[in-house]
Every structure is written in structure tokens, then in C-alpha cells.
Image 1 (cartoon, rainbow, N blue to C red):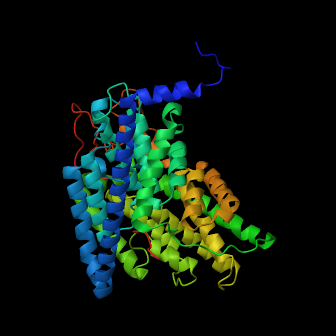
Image 2 (spheres, rainbow, N blue to C red):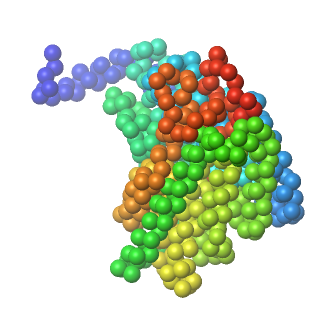
Length: 484
């Protein structure tokens, strides 16, 4: 018997590892699927980039055409989602969290993650960007990659591989973040902070290897670039304290209110508009698409898409966005999400946070482009994303890797922590609450802490997990990367 204070025998351990050939086959299968998951996100990125460029080309040629194009395509997307893949609605992160529930029957897990849902997510989210809706591809990439990785279970040893469905889902979902943001470190932290809270110790090395390998697929395809380039870090003084604190506080308050608004909208309320959404989901989606189109026209196209180009213009000091940009982008993102189209809020949240930081810089520095402006914009991105997701570590690491801002690690961390703390006083955790809502009615004992409603989904469509015996409810319902 091996005692706790006994040193490991290197040669015995090597012999044991080499003698278990099937274990190496299982590891190879997992890493192979990690490559496939990364490549699926790369393909998703290319399609999303192409779709948004196509939309902007059409918008610049005939701006007023979006008043017809966007509502029609939005209604079509919602109809297709409800008809073909209701589990693909919304962000995708709540589905991956719900799929990890230990009390969830195995045969129901595929209603949250599967190859079919991954394909639907890619197609419908791409169509959403082609419609000019305010959504991102980063959240959906989590569900896409998780669906691919979860399929590996068909090839692993039954009960002998040591890799549970939970481990595969954590690896796949985090691989999606790593590949989508070209940020492997953010993927690893996302696995711990948002998806799992812990990683199985016996498989931690394999899970992290899978996440990093998927991230390398993005690097191989697009190069080792920073998403928003590099910003010049100024010499900080006490003059930056009050503007920085104001950015963090505003992001925390607005991000918390935005999160609370999303929870109330997506879990179904008893208000007039919620009843209309439940009764006439396709018409509601068309009306929402029209609102998004009008907001886009008013802002000169700035609120269309994920918002990455507008952030780059702000960082470069070339943005002419009004001081209402952050508010209008928030409304456009809320309406898009409420319509029920497949799409995420990561990239739009970064854009909203950047707008808040840019506005604070304009107000506190007399409208002049200051060397502190890029810093405040970066703090806004980290702060608002942390407030919405209540995942401060993931948020500041994502922004740090996107702007090549390792020298700003403490500043970004402080902004994310303050904003997240304020948000927790205002709203429940967004993704955990939506995941709990998805599980309501499927797993005995799971109660939704949000508003009661027959709609069980984080987007449009009847719940993908509604029990067969239940009475069906009445008629319910990251832009591509910048290449230098």
C-alpha cells in the first residue's frame, strides 16, 4: 500500500501509463474532438464575419431597406428556431450549464447540447448578424463547441475512461471561449468561474489541454493577434482615480440593471408585452427587428452587429458616436435577445462598456482625446462584462488578452471586481438563473426563482426540456475578428 508520505516511483508510474493503451486512445479522442471544436468555432467566426460584412454592404447601399430586411429576417429566424431547434435559442451558455445538472437524466441532455443544436446555432446566429441584429457569436460558440465535444462520449470507454459528461461539457464550453476570443487563458478561467466552479482533479490536465488546443485552432487560422489591437498604457496618477472609479460604478449599476432586465424578460413576466410575446412570438420578433433597425438608422449604423468596429474606432480616437451610443446599444441588445434569436451578449456588452468609458472620458476631460481615454474604455469593457455575467475574473482576463493589456492587469481587475460587486446587489446571476429556469419542470425539485411563466426557455420557442405529459403553452416563444 502506498503511504501519503511516500515519494512516487517514476519508473513504476511510467510503466503504468504506457501499459494502459486504451487510456491513451481515450485521451487522443478527447484531444481530437477539441481540435474539431476549435475548428467549428473558427468556421463560425468566418461565417459571422462574412454575414456582417454582407449586411453592412447592403446597408451602405440602401440604408432604408433595413426597415424591411431586418424585421422579416428576424421573424424568419425565430420561426426556424422554434420549428427546428428550440434548444438553440438565446445565448447558449445557460444550456451548457443546465446540461451539467447532475440530476438531469442522460436522455434529456441532448436537448441542451448536441451536434444538431451546434449546427443550428451556427446557422441561425449567422443569419442574425446578416439581419444586423445586436448580438455576438462568443456565447453561442460555447454551446457549439460543447455540443461537438459532448459527442466524444460515443467513442470513449463506458465507465472506464474517467471522463464524465460534466468534464466533456466543461472542456467543450471553455474551448469555445478560448477559440472565439483567441484567449486560451480566458477559456481556462471561464471553465472554473462560470461553467464548473471546479475542475475534476484527475482530468484537469486533459481538460486544460483540450481548451488550449481548441484555442490554438483560432491562432492557426487568424494568427496570434490581439482582438482590439494594443493600447498605449499611460503613466497613471491620482488624476485617473475618480474617472476610473466613475466608470466602474456606472458599469456595475447599468450592467446589473441590464442583467436584471434580461432575467425578467427571458424568464417570462406577466406584463402586457410578455403576454404578447407568448401569444404572437413571430410578430413580436418582427416588431423587435423593426425597433433594432430604427435604432441602427438613428445611430448611423453604429448599433448594428456585435459592435467590435465601433470599439476599435473608440480606442483609436476616431469614433464620432454620440453620448447616447451606450444606452441605444443596450436597448438594441435587449430587444434582440428578447426576440428569441440565437445569439450572445458578450461582444455587445463589451461595446456598451466601451461606450460608457468613452463617455466618461469625454465628460471628465472636456471632450479632448486624452491618453487616458483608451484606459477608461478598457475599464468600461471589463467592468460592464463583469457586471452582466458576474464573472469578474473571466471578464478582465478576456479584455486583457483582447487589448494586449498585461500591464493593466490590476486596473482591469479592480474595475471588474467593483462592477461585479455592485451588480450582485442589483441582479441575480444571469446565466445561472436562466439555466435554473431551463431545468424547471424537467427535474423534480428544481424551482425557478424568477417570475412564473409557462415559457421555459432563455430565448424564443417552447422549452426544449418540457415534459411530454405537460400541457403545451399557448403560442410561446463576439463580429468576426479584426485581421491586421
